[in-house]
Image 1 (tube, rainbow, N blue to C red):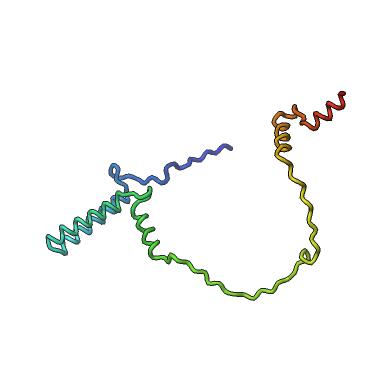
Image 2: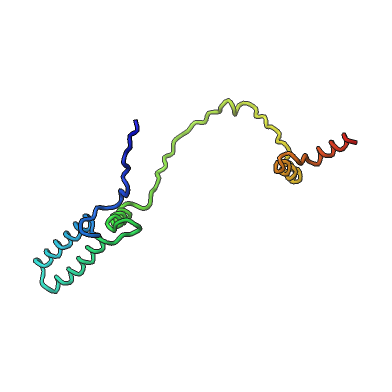
Length: 151
């Protein structure tokens, strides 16, 4: 049974409706136009021009600007969450009375194992040379023993 499944590609790409305009951007622009229309109906011309400038700037900012690869409204939401949540977290430590129990290991006498003496750097370099040569080089001590046997 060889079933093949289609794996979705580019799942983070948004659907486009008018050229490069996505559905999210289109909805944000429509909401911006609704705010401009409400400002036109509710204010005089001088205030309307000022409000229109601010509304257009905010609409373009939220619709088309990306910050660190994320849409601006996501960045703005994270920014607001940062300021609304407390920054300082304090742990209220409660003091609890603890009784100590001795384990069997603490009651027994501990015997320490005497560590082996460390090899000198000459011995280590000799061992590394034996390993590097794959055993062809036998080492000075072993060569001395082999030479004595040959004589």
